[in-house]
Length: 456
Image 1 (cartoon, rainbow, N blue to C red):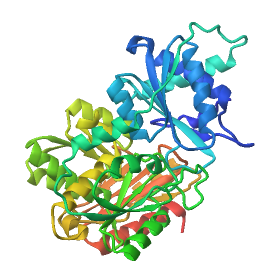
Image 2 (cartoon, rainbow, N blue to C red):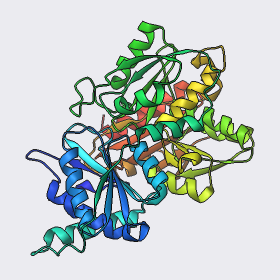
Image 3 (cartoon, helix red, strand yellow):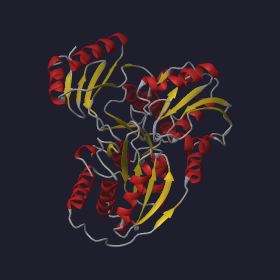
Image 4 (cartoon, rainbow, N blue to C red):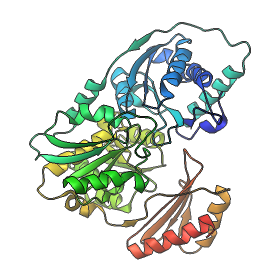
């Protein structure tokens, strides 16, 4: 079974169990067949790498997918439990395409697949459409096409190699001893953090490291403020220097300072961009359409060049490669590094923050102060009956008050503020982001748009 709504802009994601299931193991098998053909695994060395997160449906779905792909005569390297950025690492180091079974920050009943080409390069939207088309055709066929080969399955543990690679990219020598809260949210950071951070001279305070795809403590979505409260409380209780909060598949990392305040991902982007441009003057930094203006100002001051992508990891990765960019960041706490095959890795971003903080005497709030120059609403989600109608209503209300454009959803730009309203790539939501130089302006714009969107 495969339902159309599981195919998103960047990946596959949908309900994987129960009466409302949107895909199952038969659908996963068909997707494996289609993946092997569309990304031409046979022509990319004859193998692909497979990983999964801790979700309860992951074992059965990933095994069915592997069988489907291997029925096309290609081999599978199964790395087992992994974070998404560990899968990108595996694809990069093995130079083969990959498939990661995860639903990222979605609730426990969901599962999905993130795909990549060899060396962690993103698949194109056209490829994802073709995977869907061929998987539907396989499912509908009666009888099913005969296998064209019998690929081999090989299990390989790459966690230690992944950690060593990250350590080689950040100089953590000589930093002061930091007290660090890490909230794994019962997700894959509970698997990767002990290997990556355990060998460093840090005092770690671990929250929810037990792998549990039912997420008994809080949902694995750090974009929702309520899911950060445990880490914020732990920072204050333990007088910690900072907290790292990961999402379900541990490819995103949110940062909390010593006061318990959330550091804007745009501020982290500006902080790391500044550092990377010192290392490579004149380099290119990639952002998305709703990254804070602070980043553009910091990049300009550092003599760098800015390139802007649509929101979404496949778009950003593609632009990173096209521009040979040294670093990229999104508002959602995805961070991309050229030295990591231009792919996103929250763990590497966290290591950079630890290295930068560990070399100064002051607190994190002081370190990031100059990189947080605007008031931002954060991402505010609304469920609406007709996203197009609502978006047009907002655009009409702002006619003549700012420049209106549609680079990625609706963007309204004023002299010292901007408003972005765009449909989610993964959920039936409209996402609102507002930024302004003055907090009062941001709050007024935020409230006005939310009233228009929600009909208040």
